[in-house]
Image (cartoon, rainbow, N blue to C red):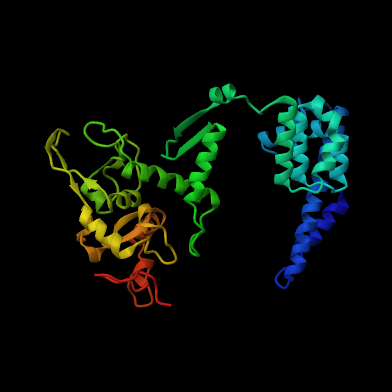
Length: 400
């Protein structure tokens, strides 16, 4: 083990600043091989440690408890490692191919999952399956093993089981964040994956979101688009939508009063101003005892005709490097209407919801501590700096 540690120390102290790209590629392949060898060796030693009653000898009720305490492993991962070790111990052909690096870590995992799903049939064809998947990719290995499993034990779940298992849970934390958990039927999952995938164009150069964050934003776009455009039934005379409750100070960017969803969940000032930037507004005046004194007529912040004009001029998101189509954009006030900005063409631009959020976050940060540009003025959003036309027709793309 000291030799392994010495080798790792040698790798981690290497200066990669001048490393050739070919050498880096070879190193990555070698690291993957080393990781594979370490994982299979860990499984072998875990099995032997359990056989020698190691956990009990050292005062642990189980192998999982030992991993959680001594190796500082998360509980779920510790249980997976123990299950993997048990499966490897009964699959000698898989372990042999794994040790010899004839199959990758992921191929080995797929084979071991197949063994867990049908231990008896798998034992009879283990060697043959290893031979079949050796030249394949991890994805093709999974595909082959899915067909093998269906041929011996039927589908992973029959349709009735899948229908009974399906479900979706929506929960919310005290801080307002939401969580989605659930099981989708195969058809529902494929439909969801295809839909979200269609809403994930290649990220713009200034888009530093992770893949998980981009999928989240695509799901929000999908929900918002449905609320905006679908022929949904009305509730109380209006289509279901997101409703906000706030006071005038909140709209002006001053926290401390009311700024929340209708259900009572408090939201940030930046979120409130972003959502109210392109929305319908209804004035409700309360008296000193919170009684309603006056309910004004609902007004549309962005009239339909103006929205069409902005779309015809901008065509897509105007943030530098982004070309998300108008369907997925909000109309943004350069100067917020709550700050006295006019709802006119030269004060409105299209921004996709990601960049609309980004602009209002920058606005909130500037309110707290203004950032100064080279000319001594606060930095303007990217769509201002690119020379965007202020009126009339014309392309919003930057000059070549």
